[in-house]
Length: 116
Image (cartoon, rainbow, N blue to C red; front, side, top):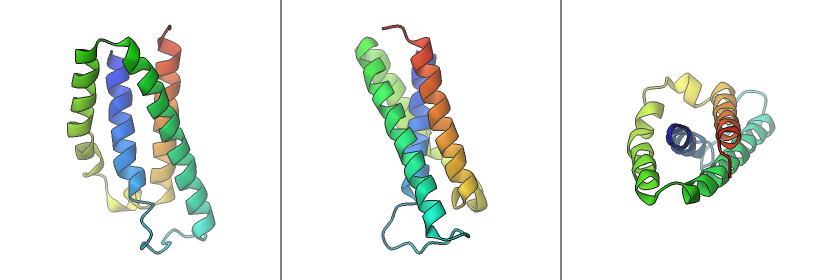
């Protein structure tokens, strides 16, 4: 249950964080050209989708009340984890790499702790 809640927090935080790198009207501000930043953004998005898939599989095995409470806590609390980060982290490659690493690490931790 704790790993599901932590994974939900990471997933919702990554949705808020990575979502800021995809608006159409945003000019590519990352140094090194838009290609590297785009690749990092799509890698972070892929890791996020893997984490969401694992959370969906685990949520089926949990009691409904536990899954709803954990997901609700994540939806309400996770944006407050991203907001205090400095803008130099939120708008840089380092932030995308951190989101990728956190999503991949949470997905790995959840799938190794769950026996279906």
